[in-house]
Amino acid sequence: MCGRFTIMLDAEDAREAFGLAETPVDWVPRYNVAPTQMLPVLVSAEERRVARMRWGLVPSWAKDVSIGSRMINARSETLEEKPAFRGAFRSRRCLILADGFYEWQKSTSGKGPSTPFFFRRADSKPFAFAGLWEFWRTPEGQDLRTCTIITCAANGVVAPVHERMPVMLSAEDGWAWLKPNPAPVLSALLQPYPAEAMVRYPVSRAVNSPDRDGPELVQPFVE
Image (tube, rainbow, N blue to C red; front, side, top):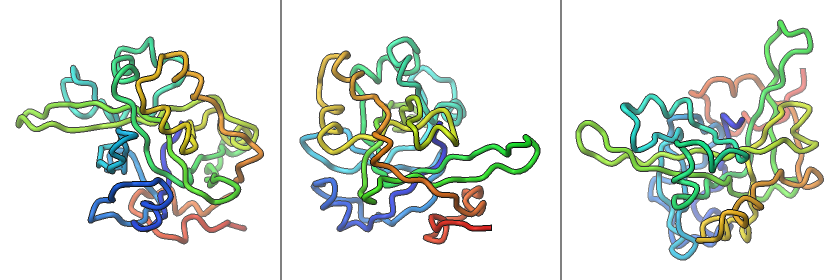
């Protein structure tokens, strides 16, 4: 799964890296993005404008927003089968801007605390998670936009820590994900990122708290 990630770029660097038309005026670098928070999302390869969406997909038919906390991820293998995701897979795909993510390795004894690891591209460049988004109407009649990050089987860098990883897309593949391509073409994009192009290292357990959000969280941790 993917439960925390980073987008550490400032607004100007983000515009240049992703070829964005503009970035939100409230853009700030993030070092510990957590579920239910607002994410920077792209929904159009042509306009390339950043939208804000709540992390945790809430289907249009959901009775309340709480279901979103259980839908922060969507398995790539079953997107066309699950009622919560198949409509979005057909017509509401998105890119979630990122430059790293965290996963937790369980203690070998099964009793101690898990160890958080940080994952990024070996060249430190940003990328985008493949995602899906939805509309949900609140009881007050307002439209809430929510999203989920698609996961796939882990590559050789992630597998020692966790069996799943988020689908990481390059710019070229990212734009293809947003365009109205046939389902087989879209599904072919949902592959593990090349292991040789990634690095991992342990970080402080301070990242466990969603209230912590600073550059110290991505520093290598040595006991």
